[in-house]
Every structure is written in C-alpha cells, then in structure tokens.
Image (cartoon, rainbow, N blue to C red; front, side, top):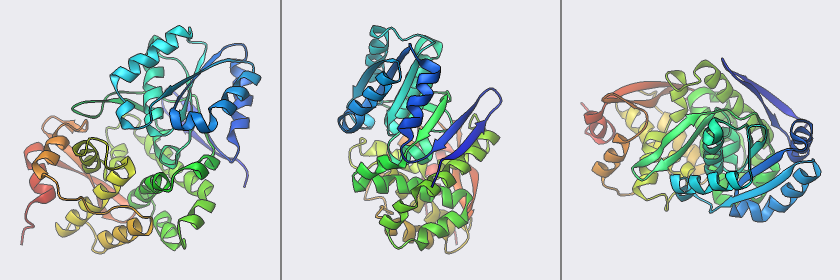
Length: 361
C-alpha cells in the first residue's frame, strides 16, 4: 500500500498528514528542503530514544540540520510544568529560534508536551508530529490540542497549536508492548462508536488483533479522516468536536483516581466508554444493544470494560475539575446509537447521580 494523505484545513492553518510505512525517509526529505542548515530539537522519551533515537539523529544530521535529542521519562507523570521547564532550558541551551523546528517523536504524552512547548517557546516555534504509538497516530497527534497536567487534573494548562505536518509510520507499532497496542485500540473503537458504524463492524469482523494490525494503515486513515472532519467543523472544541471526548470524562477521572499508575489512557477511556453507555442505555437515551456490542468489542481487543471498586464521590470530584466544564455544567458525550453521538449538558451537582444514581422507573 502506498502513501495515504489527509489535508486538514482550518481558518488560519492547513497541514498534511502522511500515512505510510517508512515515513522517516519522507521526514528527512522534508526537513532537508525546509530546514537545511538550521536546527532540529527532537523531544522524545527514553523508551523511544533507545529504540529509534540514534537512527533518527543520524538521518536528521544527514539531512543537513543540527540536531539535539531531548529525552524525558516515559509516562503521564512527565506531562508537568516542571518537565516543561526542563525542556525550555534545553531549547534555550540549543539556541532554538523561530526559524528552526521542533519534532515531537513519541506517544501522546510526548506529543502533548512537545506541542505545548512549541506553542509557548518564543510565542511559537514550528513543530512536526512523528507519532510512534497507535493512540497518538489515530488521535492525539492531529487536531492541534497541546497540554500539560496540573496536580488537580489532566490537561488543565494547554493551547490549540497545530503541527506543520504529521508523518505517521505504522511500522513503529510493531515494537509496542501488546498492552499499549491494545491501549490505542480503545481510541479506534471510540471512533467507530461516535461516527462510523462501518468502522465498528469492521473491527468486529477481524479474527484477532494480529489481523487487525495487518490492516492498520487503513484503520489509521479512517480514524484520522473522522477527526479531520470534526476538527475542521469545530477547531476550538465548542461544539461538534466535543464528541471526540466520548468516554474521556469518566476515563480521565479514573486515571487521576489511580494517580496515573494503574491504567493507561486507553484502558481508562475503554472503561469510560463502557460505563457511560451502559448507563445511558438504562436511562433510555441510547439504542438498546449498544452497550453489549461495546462490551464485546472491548473484550475482543483485551480492554477493560468495568471500573473496579472506587469511591464514586472521589471520581465525581475529579470530574468536577474537568476542563470541559462551562459555568456549572459539563457536556457528557453519549451515543444515540452506534455510529452517532451527542452531547448532553449535566449540571455539576447532578453528575454523580446521572452516572451512578438509581434508574427511574
């Protein structure tokens, strides 16, 4: 299969997503043409750096740029203002300026952190997304959301700042631990739930995860195409783009409740997708059978679908700090049926009862 391309066009920015195996070659050609003689700061994590850092560094140097690798500790706990300050220092030491380039080389944490650093350093330095995890390839590397966490909650400090271009190479997922491959599948399932029933059915028709991976370029293209349409319609997350948060409100609360240590982002989102759909179906807001279908999909791809015993008041408290709150209400994403999502506004004091209260007769 050759190169698949998607173009995202918003009011003030447009950029390309290139999906192909061996995309590093295209990256080197791009950098040589646009940034030859300049500097490239690569922000990555220690795991990715061990596997691919040396080859990426060599390729960029041969492309005619000066290069520095900035490597952080893997995981959500690195997505902080403290780590961000360390990155700023590295960028300053390397004398990065607005004519240079930052490359986000890793999963969702690296992409969020590097994108936010790029958006704020010198009030904006161009950057490229080179995502290495399935979750980042199908979701977080596109759309322009960048952020860091605060102790009080996830992604509470951030900006909208689009990459200059995104290179997606699905060969990277071959070196992912199976847990993190399944982690990304939670987002793929999410896209089928909210916008594309055919994608959901396609996932159910694969014999196993291995067969699914063999078709990954097409699956990534399908997810990115859905996100492109949603982002172009609502760049700033004020309307339709909110449906991309399906399962995330509850999922983020689970991540925070367990201090970002017990569950990956995708695992938490999987639980959020399952629990909120089970609830909305009981409340008569979602077509019957949707919850069972989602549970079957999550089980098929080895993802959790129940939140273990937890203090519901603490989970509700975590939700109360969610960045999606506007005034005293939050938009909870629900399904009317598989392939169709909507946003229901819930008052802050009613969130706990809406999710966990008794079902009316």
